[in-house]
Length: 456
Image 1 (cartoon, rainbow, N blue to C red):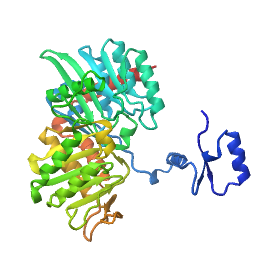
Image 2 (image 1 turned 45 degrees about the vertical axis):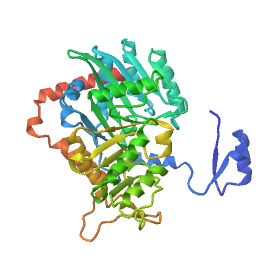
Image 3 (image 1 turned 180 degrees about the vertical axis):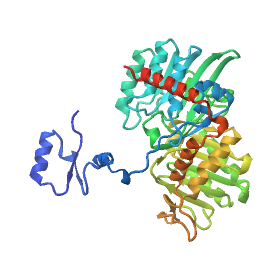
Image 4 (image 1 turned 90 degrees about the vertical axis):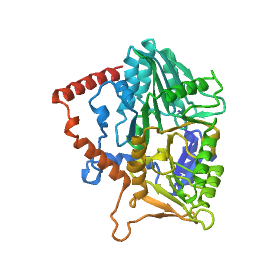
């Protein structure tokens, strides 16, 4: 394609600049001076240098025990909801979910949203396979996903070519939610299986972004997912959902309601919010109001935060932490309340005006008490205890690195989660250890299946 931008160093002679502008057929306004190194992305090639002592120990995420020795993912989901924390747990079950649905003769329909996906996406291949097998396949492709516009257009055309019903969302709204629905005929009748997530259906970014996904066949979630896809394809004007909170329908109202619920409790209230950014004016005002009633509030915000914590009379009970480590923090989590009564929500939306008002987003509750406890104790408590990769936001808007106090051990939350995952993979309880033949057989089937999926 044609050049659209030329970056040069401040030391480049004028004659060379003019020569490049003419050769590339650019206007003078397309030239940008950079006071620093050019092509910073090229530094990534340094990671291929054979210097293992300078690199992190290799980490290959594995499967949770419930999925480790069971081929039929639908059977697992029928038994219980399954939570996956990426990249500490493998993204492969999400790929298997769609592939198994594509190959299962009992599956009637597959519906999925695609915002960003990888260059050789296994989801595109699986959805195409499903359509070619005569299943009803519908995909919502967001063409305005920043930096992925061209890729998404190509995928959309490819899917349409094999008979997939491709739609592009609602006029004026960007579709950012992460939802997959599988409709399956079983002995008991029609059952709907749902995958909901905080991150994209992208195996590449799933290796470096922290995200959470949930598998469930809860009837309310299945009905909500069906209603959501009808809403996205223009078949309904949905105004209310059973479990999901959907922007721009009712997510803003639900978020404000959750904060006010805790504010009414005063000092007994508790709020923990993890997001990429916090910029929405109304949400910030409600958090200030809750703080003035002495609700204990922790905000884990990786990027922009327009709230000022620790301001006397305004936000004294609010703490803001940012964790920037090896993996990009991307999961969105809200916890409102304490103990078993706490509400735990996961979703695709940040508390920003664009997410709450101008995008289709989905936030959903975690109804399983064991999974709620895991999110609080294993995930959020780790981030709040981080004193290695965390920064603390001050009342004046400056970020200060958090360091271990005297006598306090250093703690890196992401490193701790990696080590926890490693230990969990290495130390499988004897009751969960199958016969070697079972493991070998499953690995052989997986290898054969992978070979088939990668074939042109």
